[in-house]
View 1: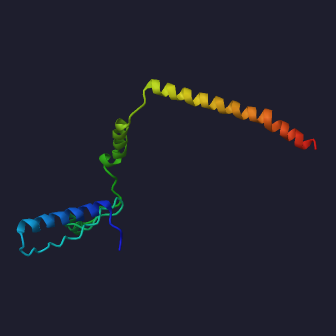
View 2 (view 1 turned 45 degrees about the vertical axis):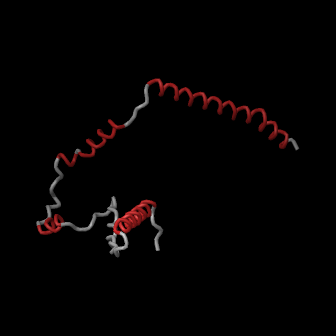
Length: 133
Protein backbone atom coordinates (compact mmCIF):
# COMPACT_ATOMS: atom_id res chain seq x y z
CA UNK A 1 0.00 0.00 0.00
CA UNK A 2 1.36 3.41 -0.96
CA UNK A 3 2.21 5.90 1.74
CA UNK A 4 -0.26 8.77 2.03
CA UNK A 5 0.92 12.33 1.64
CA UNK A 6 0.55 14.92 4.38
CA UNK A 7 -2.37 16.49 2.54
CA UNK A 8 -4.19 13.17 2.24
CA UNK A 9 -3.63 12.43 5.94
CA UNK A 10 -4.89 15.90 6.89
CA UNK A 11 -8.03 15.45 4.77
CA UNK A 12 -8.70 12.04 6.33
CA UNK A 13 -8.22 13.44 9.83
CA UNK A 14 -10.58 16.34 9.13
CA UNK A 15 -13.18 13.91 7.77
CA UNK A 16 -12.90 11.72 10.91
CA UNK A 17 -13.34 14.75 13.16
CA UNK A 18 -16.36 15.87 11.19
CA UNK A 19 -17.95 12.39 11.42
CA UNK A 20 -17.24 12.32 15.17
CA UNK A 21 -18.88 15.73 15.64
CA UNK A 22 -21.87 14.57 13.59
CA UNK A 23 -22.25 11.44 15.79
CA UNK A 24 -22.12 13.53 18.95
CA UNK A 25 -24.83 15.87 17.65
CA UNK A 26 -27.03 12.96 16.60
CA UNK A 27 -26.73 11.24 19.98
CA UNK A 28 -27.12 7.46 20.04
CA UNK A 29 -28.77 7.27 16.62
CA UNK A 30 -27.01 5.01 14.15
CA UNK A 31 -24.85 6.95 11.75
CA UNK A 32 -24.39 5.84 8.18
CA UNK A 33 -20.86 6.65 7.12
CA UNK A 34 -20.42 8.25 3.76
CA UNK A 35 -17.84 6.55 1.62
CA UNK A 36 -15.60 9.15 0.05
CA UNK A 37 -15.13 8.96 -3.69
CA UNK A 38 -11.65 8.18 -4.87
CA UNK A 39 -9.55 11.24 -5.53
CA UNK A 40 -9.03 12.02 -9.16
CA UNK A 41 -5.44 11.67 -10.25
CA UNK A 42 -3.60 14.93 -10.58
CA UNK A 43 -3.23 16.26 -14.07
CA UNK A 44 0.19 15.74 -15.48
CA UNK A 45 2.04 18.54 -17.18
CA UNK A 46 3.16 16.33 -20.02
CA UNK A 47 0.15 14.09 -20.57
CA UNK A 48 -3.32 15.05 -21.65
CA UNK A 49 -6.05 14.50 -19.11
CA UNK A 50 -8.84 12.02 -19.74
CA UNK A 51 -11.04 12.67 -22.74
CA UNK A 52 -13.84 15.16 -22.35
CA UNK A 53 -16.89 16.06 -24.38
CA UNK A 54 -14.93 18.66 -26.32
CA UNK A 55 -12.41 15.95 -27.27
CA UNK A 56 -15.24 13.83 -28.69
CA UNK A 57 -16.44 16.77 -30.76
CA UNK A 58 -12.91 17.44 -31.98
CA UNK A 59 -12.56 13.80 -33.00
CA UNK A 60 -15.67 14.06 -35.16
CA UNK A 61 -14.34 17.09 -37.03
CA UNK A 62 -11.89 16.45 -39.86
CA UNK A 63 -8.24 16.93 -38.94
CA UNK A 64 -6.48 20.13 -40.04
CA UNK A 65 -4.15 19.89 -42.96
CA UNK A 66 -0.55 19.33 -41.93
CA UNK A 67 0.62 21.80 -44.54
CA UNK A 68 -1.11 24.80 -42.94
CA UNK A 69 1.28 27.30 -41.38
CA UNK A 70 0.63 28.42 -37.81
CA UNK A 71 -1.00 31.81 -37.48
CA UNK A 72 1.03 34.88 -36.54
CA UNK A 73 -0.38 34.75 -33.02
CA UNK A 74 0.98 31.25 -32.51
CA UNK A 75 4.25 31.97 -34.26
CA UNK A 76 5.16 34.93 -32.05
CA UNK A 77 3.64 33.60 -28.80
CA UNK A 78 7.06 32.48 -27.57
CA UNK A 79 8.48 35.98 -27.93
CA UNK A 80 5.49 37.47 -26.10
CA UNK A 81 6.00 34.96 -23.30
CA UNK A 82 9.69 35.85 -23.07
CA UNK A 83 8.82 39.53 -22.87
CA UNK A 84 6.30 38.88 -20.09
CA UNK A 85 8.85 36.83 -18.11
CA UNK A 86 11.51 39.52 -18.51
CA UNK A 87 9.14 42.03 -16.91
CA UNK A 88 8.83 39.75 -13.86
CA UNK A 89 12.59 39.51 -13.31
CA UNK A 90 13.99 41.41 -10.35
CA UNK A 91 16.97 43.17 -11.86
CA UNK A 92 19.87 44.25 -9.60
CA UNK A 93 20.60 47.93 -9.23
CA UNK A 94 23.72 49.50 -10.69
CA UNK A 95 25.26 49.79 -7.22
CA UNK A 96 24.66 46.08 -6.54
CA UNK A 97 26.28 45.08 -9.83
CA UNK A 98 29.33 47.23 -9.14
CA UNK A 99 29.60 45.97 -5.55
CA UNK A 100 29.43 42.28 -6.52
CA UNK A 101 31.80 42.80 -9.44
CA UNK A 102 34.30 44.25 -6.97
CA UNK A 103 33.88 41.23 -4.70
CA UNK A 104 34.58 38.88 -7.62
CA UNK A 105 37.69 40.81 -8.70
CA UNK A 106 39.08 40.89 -5.15
CA UNK A 107 38.46 37.14 -4.75
CA UNK A 108 40.22 36.41 -8.05
CA UNK A 109 43.24 38.52 -7.02
CA UNK A 110 43.41 36.87 -3.59
CA UNK A 111 43.32 33.33 -4.91
CA UNK A 112 45.72 34.16 -7.75
CA UNK A 113 48.28 35.52 -5.29
CA UNK A 114 47.66 32.57 -2.93
CA UNK A 115 48.35 30.02 -5.67
CA UNK A 116 51.45 31.95 -6.86
CA UNK A 117 52.84 32.02 -3.30
CA UNK A 118 52.21 28.30 -2.85
CA UNK A 119 53.85 27.54 -6.17
CA UNK A 120 56.95 29.71 -5.78
CA UNK A 121 57.68 29.53 -2.05
CA UNK A 122 56.62 25.98 -1.14
CA UNK A 123 56.22 23.66 -4.13
CA UNK A 124 59.23 24.81 -6.18
CA UNK A 125 61.79 24.31 -3.34
CA UNK A 126 60.30 20.89 -2.59
CA UNK A 127 60.61 19.83 -6.21
CA UNK A 128 64.20 21.15 -6.40
CA UNK A 129 65.06 19.24 -3.22
CA UNK A 130 63.55 16.01 -4.56
CA UNK A 131 65.25 16.30 -7.95
CA UNK A 132 68.64 17.01 -6.30
CA UNK A 133 68.64 13.62 -4.64
